[in-house]
Amino acid sequence: MEVLGRLRGFSLPVTAEAGILVMVATTATFAASDATVKVIGAAVPLLALLLVRYFFQAVVLGVWQTQRGAVHFLNTGALKLQVLRAFLLLSNSACTFAGLRYLPLPVTTALAMMAPLITTLLAATVLNEDVPRSKWAMVVLGFIGMLMVVRPGSGQFSWTVIFPIGAATTFACFQVASSKLSKSGDPITTNFLTALVATVALALLLWADQATMLPEMGRVRFGSWLLVLLMASLATFGHVLMLQALRRAPLALLTPFGYAQLAFATLFSWVLFSQIPDLWTGLGMIVIALGGIGTVLLHSRARAA
Image 1 (cartoon, rainbow, N blue to C red):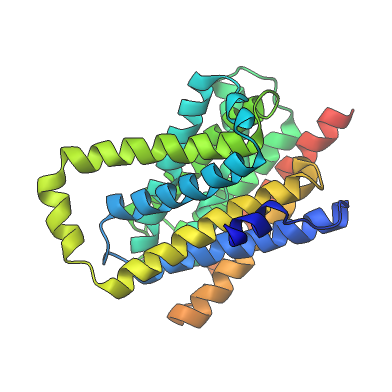
Image 2 (cartoon, one colour):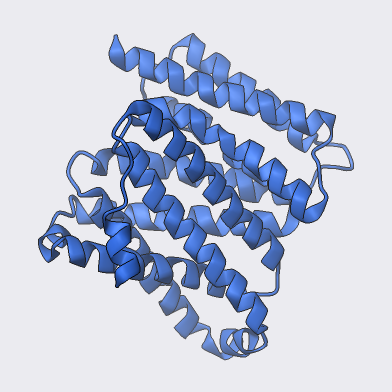
């Protein structure tokens, strides 16, 4: 309880500069969480990995919200949208975790970072919004970056790239749902409900397939479970940091700094796995980042006009 009390009072100066620093720390935390998933590999069943990750977040945020006052649980916004948001983030995590089992950490991170570009595509094709040529140019730039990373037809290409691309697509949809909920729901309640819905869904899947899953989970070593707890702690702390960053600066300002996760992913990949992106992959990562950052800046400029 003492730790949660400190978490509740956790604060930094309310300035845009502080928000940017917290956002960079958030990207480092998420990159560390992904690196831990990469270390775990296939030692833990994917379903169990996801269940522990979201159960841990649900418990931490649930206790935190209770200390803030149970009345905050009532500020949920649209419940159907909350459930949709939860399944989108769960799908995003499943795609990311699966991708990390097959692909290098920086590659998975770079392809997943195409979310802002996919948001533009969704806005034009699904929402029928008028997308200016400048944004389409950023989408083309990001697509070129993706081709540089995956290089179809080369020995580097693998069908497993569908996992991080799926992660980017589901995260783009997740951002749309989050944007709508931010206007009505409490952010901590929203993140708690996301974790709770994901936990219930995963627990039901585990119960339905318990004949297979329980023996597999029983064979997992103690050290691997410790790594799973570390991953869940990092992921939850990353969400707490994100909330702190958003209290200090608008999302439009913070989003470009989210691409710092590419640098941290590359660093962890080098330190933990002795893997460094080759020249074309590195250039592709930079091109994807430029396309994503350009999309965010153009969107911010359009809203300010």
